[in-house]
Image (cartoon, rainbow, N blue to C red; front, side):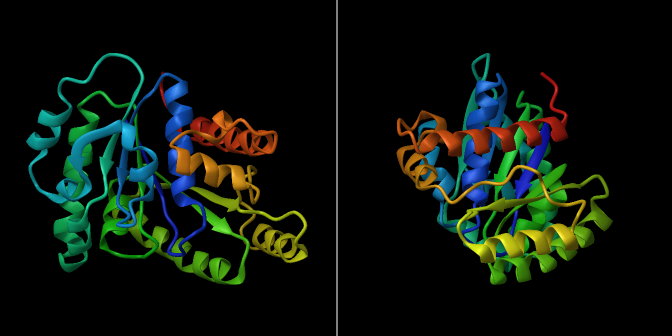
Length: 256
């Protein structure tokens, strides 16, 4: 099982949209996908509610992997998505020690891997907190959607440093890069910021940006991928999201 985290300390940059659409795309590729929602806002849990597993995100921070295996032991054959939904006790994770939280979460992700999933996608809260760090300790890959605004660009520097620090303990963690998100092609400021990022992080910019598309919000609210929104305006969004998913799938080297 390959594990991917979407992370950025800035909110509203497209983390949840990315996780949700990767889950839908990977499902259509025939994969068995686990999605863990570590954001107390629970937006991914709302969009993916039809895939509820009954297991909750805060339970991933308990030490007993037997509970994970018991929940997912009788999964049907074939492609599927199972959601480990956000819940209120997630907020209490920030009161626990990093060593305790990271160890428990990693242990339970490994238990998930033994249940037959091909990939695990983890959505995180917009904070460099304990739960995000635990997710990074357990992950193989991390992806950072970024909005082309000053505050988001300022925050990505801290995110890059945080990932570098986690790699000291998890040297296998690979930073796939930044996904330019909510790009307004008519906004010259977005064009300047995109160029600034490309100059500052030439190896870390993913060549598959996502435009500012209302159809993506429509899709998230409806619990479907954007390519199932029957509007002409959704076609471009679908192309962009599919291109990003194809890039991530290739970089993750997921076996089928």
